[in-house]
Image 1 (cartoon, helix red, strand yellow):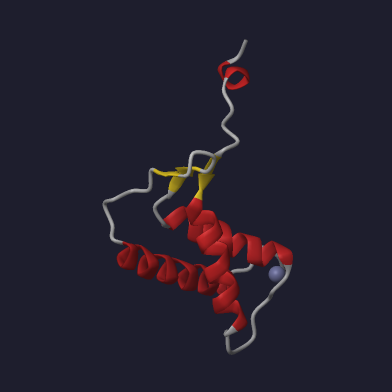
Image 2: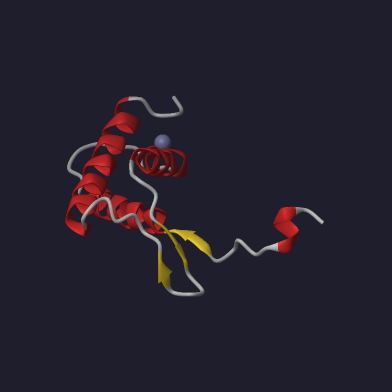
Length: 98
Ligand SMILES: [Zn+2]
């Protein structure tokens, strides 16, 4: 049996994914100016932002938080906001399509 068949990793969630997507929705909703909002660009923005924020994994079933304690909640929120706005600008200037 493979290791991944023996254990269920489905309950392992990266909380930062949810937070980045929520923040991206807020910032795009308030965005002034012309920007492509196609699926490719928006998913690209999310991926780019996620690659620059620290992961925030937890085990959802147990409700146990294993989130990094290195950063305070406030610091994390502000680094997440800036990662999202940088990702929006990067994709706006250089979209993944013509
Ligand atoms: Zn696009």
